Amino acid sequence: MSQATTGMTRNTRQRAEVLALLREVDGFHSAQQLHQMLLDRQARVGLTTVYRTLQLLVDTGELDSTKLPGGEQLYRRCSQSRHHHHLVCRDCGRTVEVAGSAVERWADQVARQHGFTDVGHTMEIFGTCGTCAA
Amino acid sequence: MSQATTGMTRNTRQRAEVLALLREVDGFHSAQQLHQMLLDRQARVGLTTVYRTLQLLVDTGELDSTKLPGGEQLYRRCSQSRHHHHLVCRDCGRTVEVAGSAVERWADQVARQHGFTDVGHTMEIFGTCGTCAA
DNA sequence: GCGCTTAGTGACAATGGCTTTCGATGAGCG
DNA sequence: CGCTCATCGAAAGCCATTGTCACTAAGCGC
Image (cartoon, rainbow over all chains, first blue to last red; front, side, top):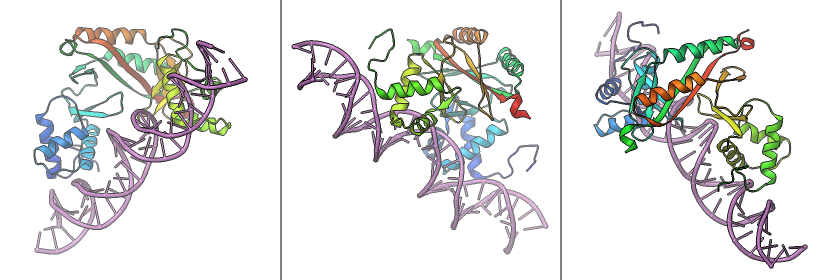
């Protein structure tokens, strides 16, 4: 329950499959998409397990996740461990990671000014990327 | 389709009921909560209509909405028409509206730097308010 | 007032992402 | 090898929200 090393206790085939896939794909994908990709490559993994594994990886900080306005959650492997935000193209899904330390500080400060503690925040930027604008 | 005044074309009893309720309650409430309140006060309005009316009001800028991490959407009447963000207490739901023009500018600027156009963003701050911390 | 047109309504079904359930499976230890 | 318990996964459940479509009534012209 408190393995400080990986956070994952058992090495199962299913987790290996999910990790292998994540190593190969770029950009954000939904759990459902990833599950379908696994099926396509003949990897026999249940949707439930995909969800569980992804959540596990997010919790241990090995995955990066973002939430679309519609509520759907997207995942991709972390390219930078620092906290950051996403600039996502509405059309093609292309994603740029942006550091926003100024925003972080602002959010924390505003919250504290109002007596809030244990502060967290969400911030996503949406737009149409140059390619899709054409 | 382009009434610049209200945006609402017909005055129905149901819309009046929803508006009347919104005028009386403070803070954010979900569509479901509002619907239940309407039933409690003997106002006969369908859930579908509540959703439609709320969306209509959000579109015309008369209502303010925010989305919980869980995906549930909350509404309340606008206290300020300028664009702003929310600082929400995780426990009691108390909400503070915060202007964040610096954040707006930052988001726009970052997006444009990456060639993105038609830029929008979402930002919510969560925390535990002073009262709930005790 | 009186129709008529059509926006608006609402009971119900459907959607969709995600979670729960619970019996089956297999990883890893001794 | 045998055992135990974390893990798996098919199916059912959850739940806010949206779609369907027959019905209702707002408000216009008369």
